[in-house]
Length: 310
Image (cartoon, rainbow, N blue to C red; front, side, top):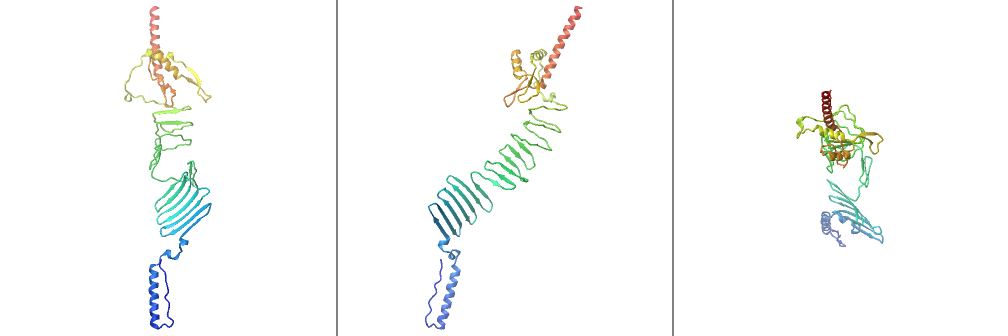
């Protein structure tokens, strides 16, 4: 730190001494202005302040590197700290093992905390991670744990999950498994490998691919085998659990027992991913056709026998 000490004039100064004295003052003033810095204008007590009581500690430091302010509550163990440096601002609140910190630079804002909450008009985030926002999301793409993806062109992929609202799309909707618990209105076509419907399906026409160019390992089902299966089927009426509507059909376990009994291994039942059995009723038409042909052959033979007897 520089300082100025004024020289003492003689009692009877002459002009030469006065001139020399003024020149000395000028030199000392020039030196002081050249070497004076900001800290020379403040006392050490002002630049560094420290106070401590039985319940709290407060500290304030001001220097060329920045500003530091810290307060600690000794009773609760809570400490708050603010530091302003040349290129960074830090805010920190800690309580024993818990700590929340915000670090800001010219290009980034970094949060370190246990739970982040936001309460704004257009964005709300609670401590459990539930978020509500209004407005538009504009950006390149979205990828949430490889389960929900949105590309920059608007293409959306959902690996799994449940959605209770409505989905509107102008292009194709492709999915491995589509489960709807309400009405599903489709103005076009649906192409999927499997579909599970808990309610009823109503349509004007239902087509199933049957082109020979799509099939392989084609084998005839003997008419006698088809007749055995059809005669062994046990038609029943039933209600699905939780529904009051009466249905009719077969029980998958009964069909499996029938095949074990007559020694057939036809794809008459299937097991879904949920472990429940299902029956491909549309495929049973092939069995009915074979059984009818077998019975018609038997009827024809009986008619020939009767004609011969007559």
